[in-house]
Image 1 (cartoon, rainbow, N blue to C red):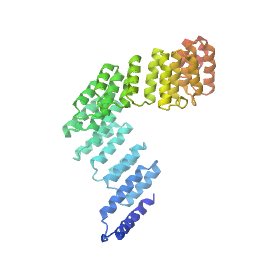
Image 2: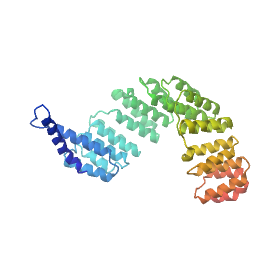
Image 3: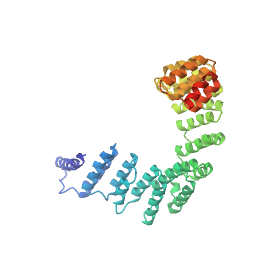
Length: 399
């Protein structure tokens, strides 16, 4: 961290050298504001690379020794860096904030955000109230931090109060970022219709705005509304397509999920693990063997997925092959997994049980226990119902 001080002298030397080599006259002095600006920028950049509190404290020492304890730009970055590393607001970040005589809106917002991240909504509101008492106007980040916190803890009453504040103070709801966090808050508080009203009133929408609403409707089971919104989306990215595929799959509409996946491929849109798990689940629901190899081929050849390195995809594929009547293919996938967890084991064990191969299921169950993989109660209950011979073992592990 000593380089913080040295860099100022390097900067001065470099400036003088550049002037000496140019045709322009050498200035009599470099202004203090130039030096200070360079120092502030360098400290903020250094804070961005800090990974633990000991490093931050070293930078903080330089901030104090260079007379920047009242610089809101630097102190805001310091507080945000601490909260990003999950350092509790009390006592360290809060004490830093308290020493600033005239905090600006961004510093206030950083403190509000810090308490919001911790889930201490009451302190966020206190800081906001103090900010208003000091006649400091909020900025978009102020409201977005509080809206996120309200959504995280499900405080609809406070969320509505702050929504009203954002309108009365300065029409912050016309801000795209604020509106998106407001939609998210209402959705998380369980009032989708309020989120839709915010969405409808937005003068400008981006893909996040549209996708938030599509995902919310899908989660609520209203795939018709999700479909209407999807059709109205100007630019459909992978996230929006995936929301529709997984939405149909999770709402027991597997054929629609597969149809959307086919449309997605025709449109040349890439896929990720979430998309593939969604369409694999749809195939499992249908027991459609003709789709199983097709989806696996797309994932492997077009996108380079190696099932062996993804326990999530591997487990989904095991379940799909088992339900499509290809338990041997399922076992090949299982054996190819580089890592296995309770889900991959349970998918394969239930696959054997589903096809009447109780001996293979029992053998694999014992193997799972030997590896130290603990079965969950849902899996044990399903297993006991499928293979009564395992009742003694399942009861032992349920205890």
